[in-house]
Image (cartoon, rainbow, N blue to C red):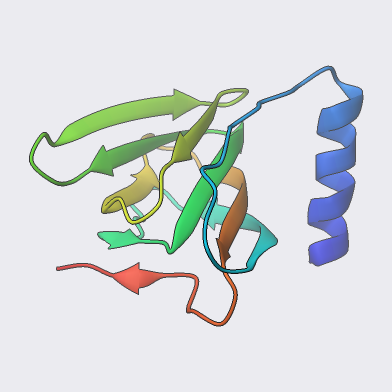
Length: 120
């Protein structure tokens, strides 16, 4: 599965797609993790956060990102669109349509900590 995600990332680079996100300096070591996620219609991650930055590209379908906190907000990102979520921001990601959605996500997170921190 990692090789398929890597091949997909390479094809995105070849198609003139680029998203740049400046990541704030952090005191400890960090690692990058590339993940391909599939969301069936109606499927959602539930509220959670990461000890680092999440950067995503929607390959097919559409997703809805719900940001929690003092100013809750919802964003819809369609195929070909990208997003990023800052460190420790509570959020949920789910399929926004009636068709399967596919997302290629990169996490830049603290070494030695779980990638996902469930939030109530």
